[in-house]
Image (tube, rainbow, N blue to C red; front, side):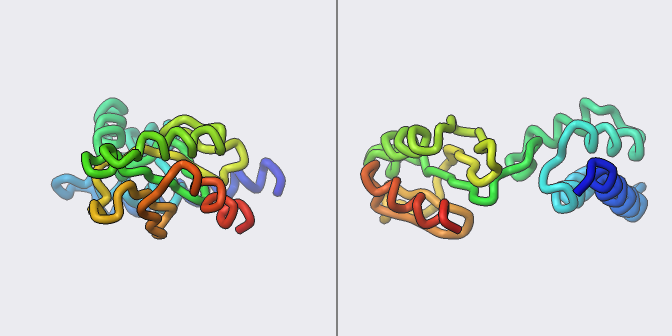
Length: 163
């Protein structure tokens, strides 16, 4: 795809976002659903989209940025095809989730919060995933992996690297 076509696609998404803004204009708390719409369209809420929202909604960029960074549901950069979340809640931490996170980082060459250059994986440490009985736990997208050991990580990742 040429650069021009990518730019056309981006412009089309901005037009759709403008429609969302128009639908929400004047509503109390409209910024949240607008940001949610932007994330759905773009996969994240990058700075150029934040500036567009601020301009179109007649609010400051700092207000848009503040909301986008306060709520964990919003990403400022694209996430990988596979988002790996390692639970760092008490039960998981006590049972070794830090070693699991360290092994993931080693195998993928990533730190928590980073996305691989090929766009395949995003690694993140997260709060309780609500599966304490399976500690330590991680999710890869919607898949739950429990009772983890660092030694199990390469085998688990292999199934996603092939896909």
